Amino acid sequence: MPPDGVVVQVEGLRKQYQQVRAVDGIGFEINEGEIFGIVGPNGAGKTTTVECIEGLRVPDQGTIRVLGLDPIKDRVQLRQKIGIQLQEGRLPDRLKVWEAMDLFHAFRATSSGWRHLLDDLGLADKAHAHFETLSGGQKQRLFVALSLLGNPRLVFFDELSTGLDPQARRATWELVRKVRDGGKTVVLVTHSMDEAEHLCDRVAILDHGKLLALDTPDNLIKGVFPSALKVSFQLDGDAEPPLLDKLGKVETNGRAVTVYGHSHGLIVEVVSLLVSSGIRFRQLTVDRMSLEDVFLHLTGKRVRD
Ligand SMILES: Nc1ncnc2c1ncn2[C@@H]1O[C@H](COP(=O)(O)OP(=O)(O)OP(=O)(O)O)[C@@H](O)[C@H]1O
Ligand SMILES: [Mg+2]
Picture 1: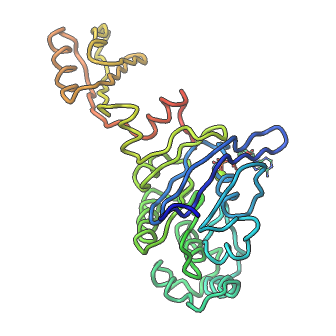
Picture 2: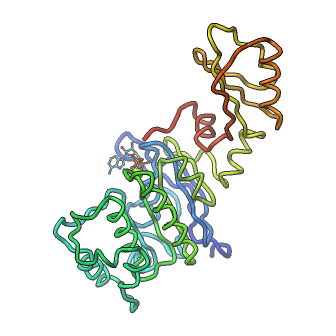
Picture 3: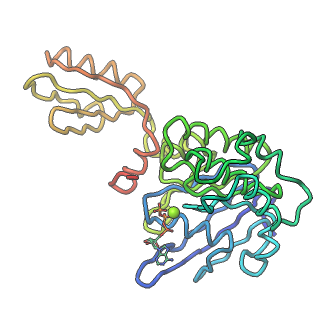
């Protein structure tokens, strides 16, 4: 039996497609009531991992327990306990919102209805709209509503906010928090480090089928960058970069300079040095290090959409 409060256990998971090692020996646990993020660039193995957990793909190796069940052997039972929003989900254009809810509801062995979900997700006035007439954000909300049919304990969202405008994206984040606050465990797959940092309680970073790191966003950032600060500026004119190395790691890119520091007084130290050296500068900014920076540090590359 899994320890109390653990809803998903994955050990030594491997999955290969021809020459591609999509998932290459991954293990982690997901706790009840958390928003668990799985992040990484395109092709990292995120969807393969969650679809093995959902029982939609058969692993080559490894053991998986979900709510105490085996996703393959206990597939039928498990399907009634989890909610799934698939990456690139589609419905027939002419299907109406209420028809979709009614149809999917019929597959669920549940007594709870579906109308309250349309209310909760702000889709009540769209009940008679055809799928094709919904905006991107409304389609996503419908997929969330469908995944919540039957009141599952554990829900999976794969690339929920990809392709949405920033406002709809924020609204989707609120929605995910609401689902979690309603007592469910949420597994959120995304290649947006920003989304993972702001929304997830814990984040697993995947690349090339391997788990690079797993912790809270704060701990991941602090673990790599203890002061979690960077000061950036542009050198004015043809000024020579001053000797900033003693303050921390320095990166220069043309006239742009970034100093990564280990001191809370970093900005004061940088400005003092520039001023005392008579170096003119502009566009000085201080930023907190982000999960994107952690990924860059771990892999030497940026995550791109
Ligand atoms: N059915 C399949 N047949 C062959 N190769 C596959 C299949 N599914 C995935 N792959 C390959 O396995 C690797 C991991 O794919 P996966 O879809 O798990 O990545 P992902 O992290 O979800 O990527 P994305 O961010 O693009 O959704 C990729 O190289 C992909 O091309
Ligand atoms: Mg994917």
